[in-house]
Image (cartoon, rainbow, N blue to C red; front, side, top):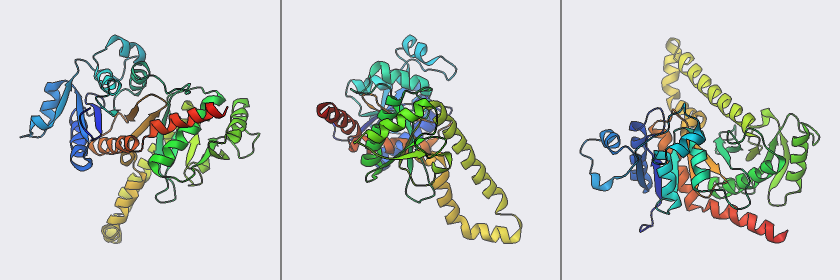
Length: 340
């Protein structure tokens, strides 16, 4: 690619605040993280979103004639619009002109484009969307997958999610011997439906992961687990519920702490603490979700993502590239096939 710096293809037309917030976050990442960003989309709109007096020679814009709207059916839109920004961004990764891709647009379209253009990693039946949640233990996040790619999951899919999630947790998040759990309605091995019981057995027998048992809903944010696997239906509900709870708590703190003179004084004194609380709870601080299982580093952001989220997603993409997470996942499956 002619450069040793990580190159990230950014779908500049994806998201509620595109392209302005997307461009702002990407430019910040270029300055602070030392990455190269390729802004994919309508050149006129992207240039209009750039700060005044921008040196266009330092900003790489890749033209894309179309974009996929949030109300379009993802697979048909991806096929019907080969020049859509998300397709062009994925092609840059496929052609080795970029190391990773990020989009805050239609998540279904991003997943469809990744599957059609990049394909799955060898040995992976279904990709999974993994996202990082904060826990009550400071500095100890938990990776949840799947949070939306697969509504229904066979037990072997959950087993693959656990292997991929363990690799990501270990080599990108930096967790030593990640503890894996299966989201279920009870701790006992026999709890749950037939698929959950069979998945539990497969996870228990897999020597590539450190499976410690079922995780109940109250365990998700306890810090006891580093990776928790579930189907995409449950995971997506969990993700959106957790985001809503975080927003409610932050709003309550904003409203209640300044009440009265004592509250105003206390709020001023607690301002640094409140900032740290926001950093731990706000989903914007975690940037996006990684699409694990496709043959490329792909991050999917929330549709409402603004510049801080975009910056953090690019940071996570850079870390995934730097730590060779795809190669490590592939090596795990190669070793498994050889030992089998």
